[in-house]
Amino acid sequence: MDRKRGFFLKIISITTVLFLLMIFATTVGSVKVLIRDTVSIIASEIVYIAESIVTRDEVYIGERVSLDNVRKQHIFIVKNIRLPRIVLASLVGAVLALVGTSYQAIFKNPMADPFVMGVSSGAAFGATLGIVLGLNVGVFAMGTTAILAFIGALLTTAIVYNLARVGNKISTTSILLAGIVMSSLLSAGISLMMIFNQDDLSKIVGWTMGSFNAANWDQVALLLVPTLIGLVVLVALSREMNAIVLGEESAQNIGVNVEIVKKIIIVVASLLAAIAVSVSGIIGFVGLMVPHLFRLIVGSNHKKLLPVSVLGGAIFLLICDTIARSALEGMDIPVGIITSIIGGPYFLYLLKKTRKNKLI
Amino acid sequence: MKVDKVKFKYSNKTVLNGLNLDIEKGSFLSILGPNGSGKTTLLKNMCNLLKPYEGAIYIDNLQLKGIKYKDLAKTMAVVHQGSNPNFEFNIHDIVLMGRYPHQKRFSFDSKADLDIVKQVMQDTDIWKLREKSIFEISGGERQRVIIARALAQQPEILLLDEPITFLDIKHQISILNLCKKLNKEKQITIITTMHDINLASRYSDYILLLDSGKVEVLDIPEKVVTEKNIEAVYGIKVKLINEEKEVPYIIPE
Image (tube, rainbow over the protein chains, first blue to last red):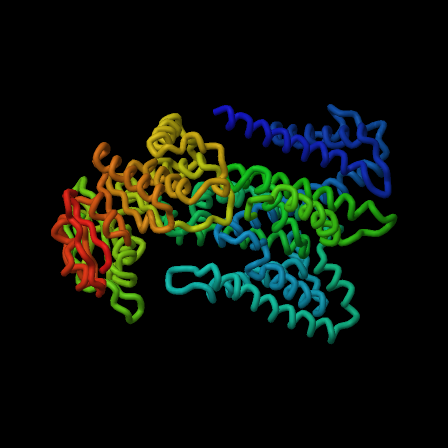
C-alpha cells in the first residue's frame, strides 16, 4: 500500500517538473522573456479560458491578471509561438514514448520503436510526395505535406500488418521483417524522388529530421484528443502487456485474450504514431530510449512504466526542442539531431551502470 | 476432465491420434512418453492453446473451446516449460499477475488479491524473494515463482509441462514435493508431463504412457512401469527393481 502511495507521489512530482520546465522554456529563445511575465501571461490565459467556459461570454484578457506591464510583443511570442511549440513537443514526446513502450511489450522485443511497422518511412514517402508535387491545400491544421505523411504512415502500417497476419494471428517476427522490407522499399522511392527533384532536397531532408518550427495551437488540438484516448486505452491494457511480455501462451492461460489485445494495441499505437509523425516529422530515439531508460529505473511493470514513460518522453523532447531552437542564434536545429546527441551518450552510460547481471 | 477422441495435427503431421482420457478430480497424473510422442501437444490441447481438429475436451461437462479465457483461467492454471524473460519484473509483481482472471479492468489490486498472493508465495516458499528481480533468482526458484503465479489463479486443475527437466535433483524433488502437497492438501488436480519415469512412479496416482499420439497404457504406476511397457514404448530394455519399496523403479540394462 505504501509502495502505491509512493508511486503516485512520484507521478505527481514528475508532472510538476514537466509543468515547471514548460514555463521555464517559454522564457528561453532569441527574445528573452521574464519568468514573471510568462507566468502572468499563462495565468491570464487560464483565467480567460476558465471564465469563457463558465459564463460562455467573451471576457477580456487581463480582467483578473494584469498584463499592463508586459510588452505586447512578448505576449504574442509566448502565446502564439513558444507555448504551442512547447506543448506540441511535449505531446509528441509523450506519444512516441507511449507507442514505443507498447510496441516493445507486444513484440516482446526491446529493440522495437514507434517506427518498426514502417510509420516513419511511410510518412516520409507521403511528405516527400507532397513536397515534390508542390501541392498546397490545407485541411484543418494540417498542410498537404502533413496529410500525405499521415496517409502514407497509415497505409504502410496497414500493409505491414496484413502481410504479417496469418489467418487470425499476427506473427511478431513477420511484422518486424515486413516493416524492415517496406521501409527500405519506401526509402528507395524517396531517394528516387530526391534525385529527380534536387531543388526540394533541403526541404525533404529537413522534414525527415523532424522539427516543431511550424507549431501552432491547431496542431496541439489535433494531437491532444487522440493522445488522451490512446493513453487511457493503453494504460487500461497494462496488465495484459505485463502478461504478454512474459510469454503469449502463459498470458492466455492466465486469461488474457492475446490476439485481440495485440490487435487493439497495434491499431491504437499505430494511429498515434502516424498522427505524431505527420505533425513533427521523424524524431528518432525518443520512442526507443525513453521506455528503456525508465525500464532500468522502475522495472517492466507497465502499470508504472507506461505513465512514467509518457511523462519522461514529454520532458525529454521538451528539453531537446528547447535546445534545438535556442542553441544557435537565428537557427533552428532539427530536433531529431538533438535527441540522439543528448540521449545516446546518457543512455549508454545508464546501460553500462545498471546492466551488470541484467539482460536489458 | 475428459478428453474425447481427440485428434490433432500440425499441417500434415498427425500428433494426437484419437486420444481418450478420463481424468479424476483431485488426482495426480503424470504423462510420460518419448520425445515427439505428443506430450506437450496433448497438454496444450488440454489448456486450449491448441484446438483439436477432431474430438473435444470437456471440463465439468463444458466443452473447453466454449469457455471464456478468463473463466477457464479461474479453473485451470498452466506452468509452461521455462523460458528466459527479456524484461525485468520483481517476483511479487509476477505472482500478482495470476490474479488477472479475478480482477476487473481499471480496478486496483485489492487487499484480497494481495493476501492471496502472500499466501501462495508462502506456500511455495518464495515470500522472502518477493522484492527480488526475476533475473536474480535461480532456475529452481523461477519455477516456484511460476507455480505461485498459477496458484494465485486459485485453480482446481494445475497443468505442468516438464516442470523439473532443467533442474538439479534437489530442486526436482522440492518441486515434486510441492505438487504433491498441493494435490493432497488443496485437492488440486495435477497433470504433468515428465521424462523421469522413476520420479513419476514415486509421485503419481496415475501414469499415462503415450506413444505416437496414442494412449499406450493409463493406470497406476505399478501397472504402467513394467519392463514390457517401457520396451514397447521407448525401445530399450530395462530392469525393474522393486525390492522393499512398493513403487516400481527401473534402470536401463
